[in-house]
Image (cartoon, rainbow, N blue to C red; front, side, top):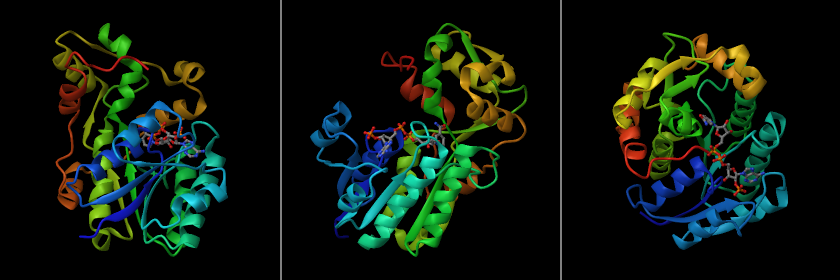
Amino acid sequence: MATKRVLVSGATGQQGGAVVDALLSGEYGEYDVSGMTRSAESDAAAALAARGVHVVEADLNDRASLDAAVEEMEYVFLVTTFFEDGPEAEADHGRRMIDACVDAGVDYVVYSSVASADTAPLEHFASKARVEESLVDSGLDWTIVRPVYFMQNFTWLAASIRDGELAVPLAEDVSLGVVDVGDIGRTVATAFADPASWRGETVEIAGDELTLEGFAAAFSAALDRDVRAVHLDVEAYRAEGGDEMADMYRWFNEGGYDIDVDALSERTGIDYVTFPEYLDAHWASRSAPASA
Ligand SMILES: NC(=O)c1ccc[n+]([C@@H]2O[C@H](COP(=O)([O-])OP(=O)(O)OC[C@H]3O[C@@H](n4cnc5c(N)ncnc54)[C@H](OP(=O)(O)O)[C@@H]3O)[C@@H](O)[C@H]2O)c1
């Protein structure tokens, strides 16, 4: 198979970074990988360059920079975020990149959205649903992956978990779907390896589903110490976590994602990382994550 030129947006971040890892692994074909960032001067950008990634400076707020970034590209991985500029801007970011891909004649775009983007009553999900709509209406060949809650989010709580307390605004008996970010990269690379069988498909990605007690038990086993589940009250959490995150946990507690890990594995051929496997790989060793 010929080497494909692919632009990975968010390459310095979690999802784009995982896509870069998968594409460079050689397991999904041969790629000439360009990684997009707003600053080629960062340590993360330098680390990409050291691995043979062409670092491309572009900003999702700047159409001209996107036109230059996607020129000559065959494939594009698109990820958007609301963290810095909010959900309105996130929808604009995605649409701007999609317009640039249309004008440049890009062959195939894989967009990472979020599970239940079109049904959850949450602004940072609805913004991704709007990007999805832009992509579907664009005339481009596309695949949409929709990840659930990242296993890596627990690193934000590393200090208190190591002190024996897992405090999250999840109610008793509520199961939360989780995914290892690495599996997002593997799923995206699986699509890039065979666009003909993936185009037009939207796939929700999860590797495991646990209650808060289940997460705490997994931490207890991995860290070899007792870790207690503490069910925070969503409204008490609101002051600290903000409305959008509090509303998300409220939605989780009312049912949340609807996932089927077995059907996903059958479709992709990927053996998705379970939560205990993620902990064994990232927390049980001396190099366990510190709190963010
Ligand atoms: N955490 C979860 O559980 C979860 C689950 C599902 C979906 N999501 C979604 O995942 C998204 C975040 O993905 P992530 O965790 O991979 O991101 P991340 O690690 O926070 O990294 C953000 C990336 O986006 C790039 N970026 C930000 N603003 C940009 C702009 N204006 N122009 C160009 N690049 C820009 C950054 O690049 P530079 O800084 O180098 O320019 C960086 O590479 C969010 O939309 C979130 O809603 C999260």
